[in-house]
Image (cartoon, rainbow over all chains, first blue to last red; front, side):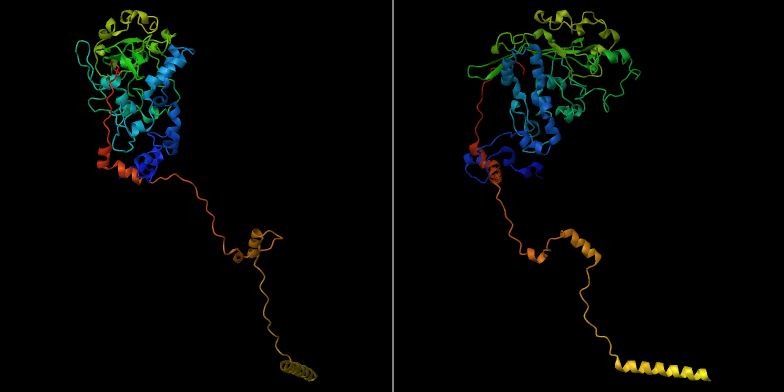
Length: 349
Length: 111
């Protein structure tokens, strides 16, 4: 049976001229993606209206952090860099529901069918590849060659991204947020239908009130995950944008919560080093991040390496007093000590 | 006896009057009735349709109706047959296929 959208025909979405056999004349005005207001929104109004607040669409998370580390004076130059290097991920509807995102090379997913739920391997992990994909599927190895197991939600059972990350959340329909860790936890491990039974006295000795209130779930249940350092962006002489980044590191680090709030009340969380550097955008101007130290480079993280049993939850002393698990001054590069002042653990619990 | 004679006299008078009437009085002529007045319902309906003081326009007077006027709206040509014909033709697609130009990426490291 033909896809329902076929009834609208090719030209309604892609433009062009019908009834013409000459190739050039037929393709006059053809576009890959006509504006959402002229296509998807005509039927899918609720989702389309949320697009401006959809973090996948507006990439507000990038802007939020550039503004925090930069300044109003440097934002124009930072936005040029953003347009050249970051905005390629910006996705219209079709680049998940019909084809792979353009930033991953495009290509139809299943002929020209419209898929309500995009296939995770060609869409989600096409973009979220180097960290989420490799962690979730168990493709990482530690420095000493030990393979990090796949996330327990992936293997066995292979839950897909959409099993936890709902369409409402990914389409920006649950609220207006500046960053993916802004607002309530979506998803939350203990939400209805998931691990809602987790509470003090549930039969698991470590699930004490103190632990559950002060530690994010990942502190006890995540394995090692990926850290990236010092990404630098620039353009070639031909104007082609490119980046250079240091080799990533697989490690596990617990630190103090940099975004403690009623939504994330934990005192300790897992931290990930993000690929920012003080001179990441120097190609576009000097000192474009004058407030670099206002945000930690070891950021709040929810690694996709969840295990029921981990080295740190094997016994009390596996975690308590084990400095190797915690982010200390020794783990932080000297030029980043000030930025990470609030997340470094001074005294190992 | 005298009363009987009186009663007999009155009976004779009545009989003679009756007989005289039958012979001389003709039956009333039946004239066609006038058009019946409109029923209350019909009056009410008409008063709603035709405002007072305006002449009633008979339905038959509205015919024949004028021919409907149509304004041609300019619409884009949405004949997709040629799109599909070309984009599903293996022969044409192969003939027009262009190998994507391999561009060497200058990026280093994981994206």
